Image 1: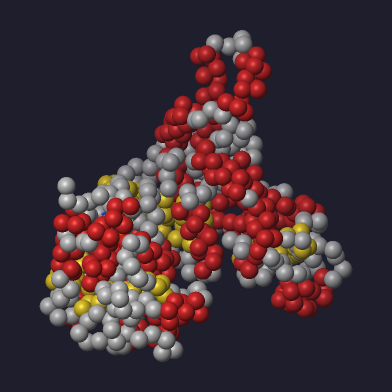
Image 2 (image 1 turned 180 degrees about the vertical axis):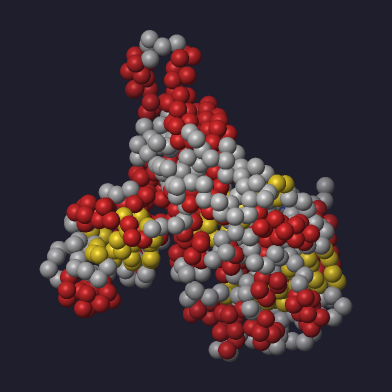
Length: 634
Ligand code: AMP
């Protein structure tokens, strides 16, 4: 039987390479575009979502059209983000693994330019680039685009959203007029149309699926809640989906951090991804997410662009995007590569109009969903637990030694009694936790913020009364590779305080500020007296006051000397040391999450977040699982 990719005109070397990647049949976009692009004589506009197999749709024809005997750049692929740039370059390297003398370079900001220049000097045929770094390299006259025959503009709408229009113009002006331009975009706003008009001649236009339609594998739901209940609603949704693996979108960096911090404090396995993180931090966060060591990635639109993580079960729009068009990009993070996914919007009643607008744009209807009750969550969690117990792999070697004693303990009980007791152990706690959980669904006409409750708790979610908090300085920060979640774990573990007592975390370079509840400050200071990080004293002090941690005595001087000097004095942080610090932090996170759950691998409902009867808890065993995983690695 002829391989379907061969039928489309792809050569054996490439067919064998994609076979190894598990590509058995072309995706619809590949089926439609490969024959057109293989002709090599047309400009092309492909209106396609991410996750549809776009990269191979243009990557495979490129490999057929390029002359690999020459070492000159012949194809330039421009894309909006470093993530996407790396993915495309990697994909094309994989497709061309059997192709002799094929060289692909990824050119993107935030990485060593010298290495990229070296690769270019050594000879490449395919350059995959983000616009900023590409211009930099062009400015250095370090690349010759006179042999470029094909330019691919991938996620063109996103590049324009990100303000790359001028950069693209400048870059394209260094390529030959006769080149062919292939443009891919999820949406076709007027600006993208303009590019198509300006740079292309009678492009062949293909629309994969209905124009602007979201992926057919994605279901769209919305929940209407009062604005103040948004956070509790988010938790309720997460709790109701014990196996959730989701990207949660917020509008601003601040919201992203806030939501992530609260989730972390409430024991969820979450972290944030936004533009204020260094590239290294972003890589770390993404790696954890990819490895499924993290369950909830809280991200801004820009930071999450181009993320290609398979098996994302849900996209949650914690806030709706300003640009309705961005909704397609957000929801495209789930339902990838033939999988199904759910895109959820948590909105207030004033925003239902926006949902209707999105429906018009994506050509699909949303389902108005009701937030589960506390009881629903309990039931779901209970059966998730039962299911896990049923499927757990028994480590006979380890457990056998305890079995006689365990059997002895249970000798008086029937099998049914044991099961009942065991199930009750968790279920009672679920019930207790969710007792009197309020209905978070807002009624259609509930436009105000009718404050019917005195308690704020998590239900109010994100408001801290700052008078209850003391702002502390601590001499570790992002240069130590701490994320805010790491720092939270570090402070809580070493200071022996609950994550619930921690307010804002302001992560700086060589130091950070952290707010803690006033009545925990003394204990924190005491416990931090002898704490070291990578062999260096950790100093923690009230912001603007003398230090209480560390070896004392030099606080005044340190304050005068400034943080930079102090840190340098504190000694270097070797990579190995840093890793061990990471180990500490990881184990602290694991310990915290694990704490008090009776070793059963399930969350301690009673031990965590308190007065919100409507929220908390996220995925029992899974968090412990990942904590355990991380501990093993540290
Ligand atoms: P893309 O839209 O290029 O980012 O691709 C989305 C995902 O689909 C990636 O993980 C690809 O590896 C995968 N993929 C692309 N084409 C195929 C194919 N023909 N068969 C199976 N998986 C594919």
